[in-house]
Image 1 (tube, rainbow, N blue to C red):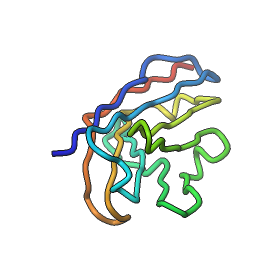
Image 2: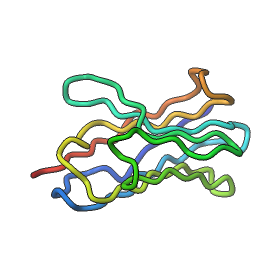
Image 3: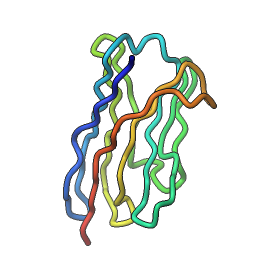
Image 4: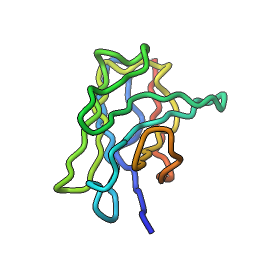
Length: 117
Protein backbone atom coordinates (compact mmCIF):
# COMPACT_ATOMS: atom_id res chain seq x y z
CA UNK A 1 0.00 0.00 0.00
CA UNK A 2 1.36 3.38 -1.00
CA UNK A 3 0.87 6.21 1.47
CA UNK A 4 1.32 9.91 0.78
CA UNK A 5 1.72 12.51 3.51
CA UNK A 6 1.68 16.20 2.63
CA UNK A 7 3.21 18.91 4.79
CA UNK A 8 4.27 22.51 4.58
CA UNK A 9 0.92 24.23 4.46
CA UNK A 10 -0.01 27.12 6.69
CA UNK A 11 -1.12 30.71 6.93
CA UNK A 12 0.89 33.23 4.95
CA UNK A 13 0.43 36.83 3.89
CA UNK A 14 -0.06 37.73 0.27
CA UNK A 15 3.28 37.93 -1.48
CA UNK A 16 4.80 35.28 0.73
CA UNK A 17 6.12 31.83 -0.09
CA UNK A 18 5.55 28.26 0.99
CA UNK A 19 6.98 24.93 -0.04
CA UNK A 20 4.72 21.90 0.12
CA UNK A 21 6.20 18.44 0.45
CA UNK A 22 4.67 15.06 -0.22
CA UNK A 23 6.47 12.15 1.36
CA UNK A 24 5.71 8.85 -0.34
CA UNK A 25 6.07 5.50 1.36
CA UNK A 26 7.58 3.22 -1.23
CA UNK A 27 9.55 3.80 -4.37
CA UNK A 28 8.21 6.80 -6.20
CA UNK A 29 10.32 5.85 -9.20
CA UNK A 30 7.53 3.41 -10.14
CA UNK A 31 5.18 6.32 -10.75
CA UNK A 32 5.69 8.32 -13.90
CA UNK A 33 3.12 10.98 -13.09
CA UNK A 34 3.03 13.35 -10.12
CA UNK A 35 0.71 16.25 -9.54
CA UNK A 36 -0.68 18.75 -7.06
CA UNK A 37 -4.41 19.41 -7.00
CA UNK A 38 -6.13 22.15 -5.04
CA UNK A 39 -9.59 22.06 -3.55
CA UNK A 40 -10.87 25.59 -3.13
CA UNK A 41 -13.04 26.90 -0.28
CA UNK A 42 -15.98 26.63 -2.69
CA UNK A 43 -15.13 22.95 -3.22
CA UNK A 44 -13.81 23.30 -6.75
CA UNK A 45 -10.91 21.09 -7.77
CA UNK A 46 -8.08 22.61 -9.76
CA UNK A 47 -5.10 20.83 -11.25
CA UNK A 48 -2.32 23.15 -10.15
CA UNK A 49 0.79 21.41 -11.45
CA UNK A 50 1.65 18.08 -12.99
CA UNK A 51 4.63 16.45 -14.57
CA UNK A 52 5.17 13.15 -16.33
CA UNK A 53 8.55 11.53 -16.51
CA UNK A 54 10.47 13.00 -19.40
CA UNK A 55 7.86 15.68 -20.04
CA UNK A 56 7.92 19.38 -19.21
CA UNK A 57 5.68 20.31 -16.28
CA UNK A 58 2.22 21.69 -16.82
CA UNK A 59 0.83 24.46 -14.66
CA UNK A 60 -2.54 26.08 -14.26
CA UNK A 61 -2.48 29.49 -15.90
CA UNK A 62 -3.13 31.13 -12.54
CA UNK A 63 0.15 29.84 -11.06
CA UNK A 64 2.53 29.92 -14.01
CA UNK A 65 5.74 31.67 -13.12
CA UNK A 66 4.99 31.46 -9.40
CA UNK A 67 4.83 27.72 -8.62
CA UNK A 68 7.33 24.97 -9.37
CA UNK A 69 6.69 21.24 -9.12
CA UNK A 70 9.55 18.84 -8.59
CA UNK A 71 10.24 15.26 -7.57
CA UNK A 72 13.17 13.63 -5.83
CA UNK A 73 13.15 9.93 -6.61
CA UNK A 74 16.04 9.26 -4.25
CA UNK A 75 14.10 10.70 -1.30
CA UNK A 76 10.62 9.68 -2.52
CA UNK A 77 9.37 13.23 -2.22
CA UNK A 78 7.25 15.43 -4.47
CA UNK A 79 7.42 19.16 -3.82
CA UNK A 80 5.58 22.30 -4.80
CA UNK A 81 7.40 25.59 -4.36
CA UNK A 82 4.96 28.48 -4.20
CA UNK A 83 5.93 32.12 -4.32
CA UNK A 84 4.18 35.46 -4.71
CA UNK A 85 1.17 33.88 -3.09
CA UNK A 86 -2.25 35.42 -3.59
CA UNK A 87 -5.46 35.08 -1.56
CA UNK A 88 -6.96 33.11 -4.45
CA UNK A 89 -4.28 30.44 -3.92
CA UNK A 90 -6.07 29.51 -0.70
CA UNK A 91 -7.25 25.92 -0.51
CA UNK A 92 -6.39 22.39 0.44
CA UNK A 93 -3.52 21.04 -1.63
CA UNK A 94 -3.39 17.34 -2.43
CA UNK A 95 -0.50 15.33 -3.79
CA UNK A 96 -1.33 12.73 -6.44
CA UNK A 97 0.92 10.10 -7.98
CA UNK A 98 0.09 7.55 -10.66
CA UNK A 99 1.83 5.24 -13.02
CA UNK A 100 0.53 7.31 -15.90
CA UNK A 101 -1.47 10.48 -16.42
CA UNK A 102 -5.20 9.88 -16.40
CA UNK A 103 -5.05 7.13 -13.81
CA UNK A 104 -6.53 7.67 -10.37
CA UNK A 105 -3.36 6.64 -8.59
CA UNK A 106 -2.74 7.49 -4.96
CA UNK A 107 -3.65 10.60 -2.99
CA UNK A 108 -2.56 12.22 0.22
CA UNK A 109 -4.82 13.64 2.90
CA UNK A 110 -4.14 17.24 1.90
CA UNK A 111 -2.49 20.24 3.50
CA UNK A 112 -4.22 23.57 4.03
CA UNK A 113 -2.81 26.76 2.55
CA UNK A 114 -4.38 30.04 3.56
CA UNK A 115 -3.20 33.30 2.05
CA UNK A 116 -4.36 36.47 3.77
CA UNK A 117 -4.65 39.78 1.99
